[in-house]
Length: 228
Length: 228
Image 1 (cartoon, rainbow over the protein chains, first blue to last red):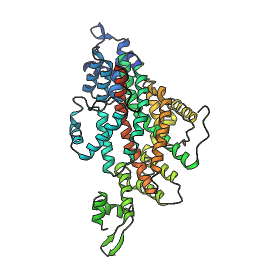
Image 2 (cartoon, helix red, strand yellow; image 1 turned 180 degrees about the vertical axis):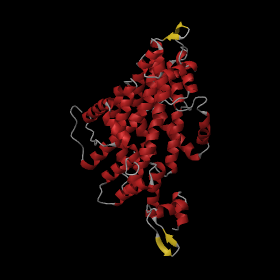
Image 3 (cartoon, chains in turn cyan, yellow; image 1 turned 120 degrees about the vertical axis):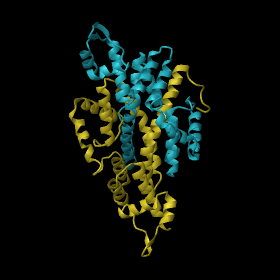
Image 4 (cartoon, helix red, strand yellow; image 1 turned 90 degrees about the horizontal axis):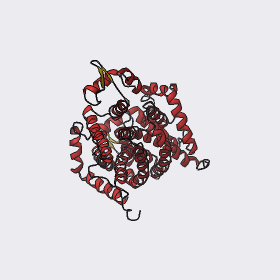
């Protein structure tokens, strides 16, 4: 297909496609004349992935290039590609990460954060989670738990165990669903959409579930749903 | 206690305390001389709640005043106070909400959003959730599901049922924990901290759980944790 058709097929503007070609994110098409190139399904898949990384994930061009390089290097196990994608989404990739380094150091320098880290690591270890010490979510969780303690609130530390118990099957379902897509590009695209939009969906559903739970407490339990 | 002691006790600056007094968020202390007032435990509790609403929840002074009015009107059932707090946190309170009204209308005007709403309502009804049509999370969930469909991704619609199943006990645990705090001010303070910081903690733990689940898929299941 020509560039105009590629644009219609993917919903990405011709100007953006040309930009991705110049930046080397999208491989060149097959030249059919000095001024015209032909594109195929591989370009459609790659454009969908680029759009997920940049538009949904908010990655920079440098961060996107890093993830694509991992996708394209067949030696890199899919598991590591997903890890690199996750790090990029949390702004930990070279070029995006520099501005966060001060926050990162502060975590280890604070007594409250130290206690939060110990609490978190103990709960996670008890549940057999296999998570590296540099997982970007671990740092974020420590920050939140420390903030909560500084506010004098014990709500989150009380609920931590419950959260860990309930997020384990949820994350397993998510990873299983995404990995089942097969192709490396499709898996990474699904991981980006699932991670970013999934976080928004979970937050929104949690707000609905709070209203439902509060209603049940105030007015007594609902009738059992059919089949439930 | 004097205003300086109230400041030390709560970690809120004297300037902020004076501002809250002027804005009527914090009731005046008992005058002990024309220029001096004495404050008590009620002021400490109220300041903690104000700080949660403004600093953690990001509410405006108007939004804070609205929630405090509901807290102070004993006729308003706690369940409704929590609903109003939730709406304020989602920016739906008068004064904060105006700028969102265009987003809100767009939801109903779009065919994709219409399909997303039907899907969401069907899943939620099947699980017996009792949620008003104007729940702010419902609108947000519809937006996310519609965005996901526009991207051509079916990851989230596939996972929706799983999310609903897993968030139900999680939200029930959260609401139960917060309501058990007893006093209306403490309950609302816990709801704000739990809602806002809890969302951050859940997102962070989900990132950790993804790494753990991906590791398990790549390397086989871990040994069962002790007692698990």
